[in-house]
Length: 112
Image (cartoon, rainbow, N blue to C red; front, side):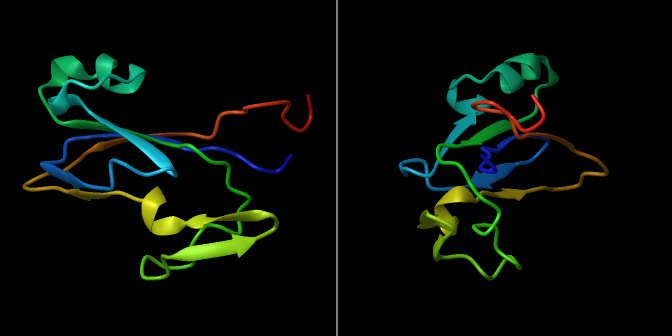
């Protein structure tokens, strides 16, 4: 299958905006004592940490072309709402921040 899930981890922000109660993605923030492996590893840094993971697989056609191109989609037997799969982070006085990205295989990957 060409469908993949995505996982993101980010540190160094001051505030995050996302919809915590939706069927498209899960969000875990360190300051709310929710756990993720990524944020648990970063807990000693003293910075906020967000871990976000998709609950549904994407097939590429669900990716918006621009940040303002968010909304409902239906393509390649894949449907959902891209607004629910996004998050926004706010940074203040930062010269760097850390981002982790992974697209793990949930079943047999091509080439295996």
